[in-house]
Length: 320
Image 1 (tube, rainbow, N blue to C red):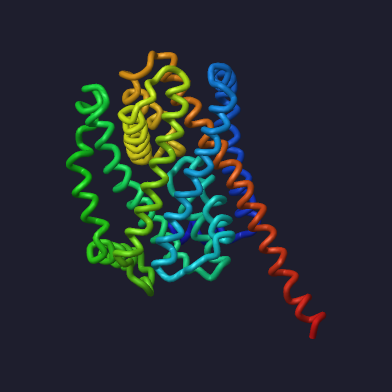
Image 2: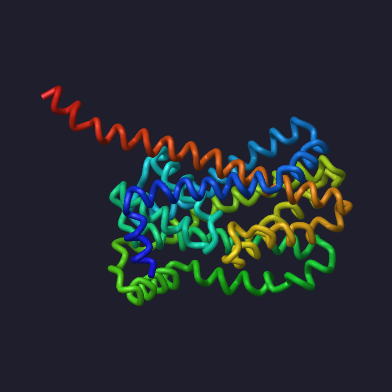
């Protein structure tokens, strides 16, 4: 199934159409909530919005660095510029229903840089596992600090964490990747994942969670939440919990709806109903803006790189 989808994506017209459709889905996610967004923006100081937007951009960039660390560990070291292009463009695919389009897009774009498609798919899978494990570790904070309703509904994160953590142990992870590749009749990976590679990716992922939580905390304190370390920890853990639950709802583009519902429950004890709505709405919108902006920038980088590759033989010929 994945092989057939990758074959379809190799057609230039299909690739261009995919990017247009994915970016269109991002824009539609913003336009469809425009009235609510403008109402929410009016309640937040401009400086706070600017800071939250900056944190959103940093968060997405840190997730790219985590993905890049896994890619390097599996044998493909990309310059920062190239990695940014591949990752940021592929990530707009998560706004399309299905939950696999960003993975397929990363595999197809990576092939332009001599990265085997099987490796790209494995890299994205490992990166997601790293995000889940680190996210669950921080989600425990939300369960401990949030109202009792959160513990009743999401207390499973406490026992799910050690179970998923085992999967990231190199011997277990490499064996699982090998089995998955054999089942799908794909060649084995040339390089196994190492403990150092997993640890590096996990550090970047943890930093990303902290920045995402800081974005939520900045918005929440602007509408009434106390500016304390406990509230910051709640925002970090709450966003990590919301992302994890939203990711499991793969049929919904980028976890739309599910993620906001979880974050609303976590923040319910800290803000009134109106404040919760403002925070969850703006947090989602600003992250979408970051995806659109970085995805558009990545597309520009990809086109610039492609033009340079086309022009290089001519330059060499002129100089010879």
